[in-house]
Amino acid sequence: MSPFWSPLVHQLAPYVPGEQPQLANLVKLNTNENPYPPSPKVLDALMAELGGDADRLRLYPDPGATALREGIARVHGLDAEQVFVGNGSDEVLAHAFMALLNHRNGDGTPRPLLFPDITYSFYPTYCRLYGITPQTVPLDERFQVRVDDLIATAQATHAGGVIFPNPNAPTGCGLARAEIERLLTALPDRVVVVDEAYVDFGAESAIPLIAAHPNLLVVHTLSKSRSLAGLRVGFALGHAGLIEALVRVKDSFNSYPLDRLALVGALAAMEDSAWFDQTRGAVIASRQRLTAELTSLGFEVLPSQANFVFARHPAQRGAALQQALRERAIIVRQFSRPERIADHLRITVGTPAQCDALVAALREIV
Ligand code: PMP
Image (cartoon, rainbow, N blue to C red):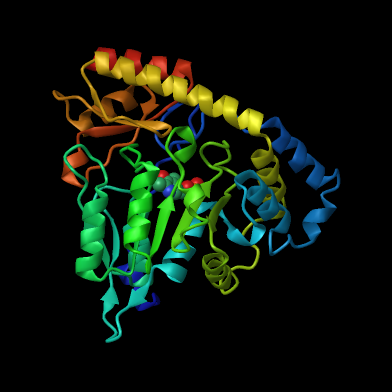
């Protein structure tokens, strides 16, 4: 605390990212990074951009990120004006909160933003930052998003928008595209943001719904399925009108959110579809094996369509399990709130060897 702070800063509740310990020999299954390296073509592109003397770093990057946006558009069958890129999908999401999800009624009262009660914990943080009123909608008893509840709450509270991850985080549970379409159709005059950070690991993308639904914004990241968490690249897809709002916010904030290396590295990753398919296939196979092994140890594992599983052991407390794993140099994520998930562990799917180490440790502990 300091008297120099702007008043807003006192009210912020900053997001706490998973730890990044600088220890060798750690089995790191806590922040949903990909256990496989990015496409080798990414390194080639970075080296080519540096060009031996790095002279290009003297010059600003393309503020419109045109080549990258065109490349992403090609991969997803859209036009470049339907693509927005940012410094990680967190930045893209932040701009979406400000540009598309912050609405008021005619009398000046805020219209709430809906999201599930158990979801990505950055959403309430952005609400605080931008003065948006959050309105949570409970997941059902099987931790699923219920579209009927979203529609009813949106109508009852005159919500200004809806956001949720698909698959949801930290549960890993996916929502069928037909259900998302039902939501978009029921709420045609509000923006629905679908945060597809983990969609490439087995859920149904909402991207095919963009053509018919101008109220849909789909957000992706290269941090998970493209193994580039360290490069910081995310993007949003939607009708050009929505993208223009994001560009207006971006150009009022930072014209160059992606540096030269990020622009070329991200493009190379997006274009290497063979690498993408091979590595995500390996993660999905590991997830299936890990789910079976955890189940045989007595864990209840939610059906995951992501690169992590969400599991609890009926006889163990979540925090104690996390600590016992830590003592064996394995780190996973545990959330003490909401209470309903305090005994769950969110475990990133690692390589087969990392999953084996986790299962061996858990076998000892439970
Ligand atoms: N959305 C969800 C649901 C996430 O879990 C994450 C990762 N913490 C992100 C978005 C942000 O990812 P990034 O900023 O690395 O693109």
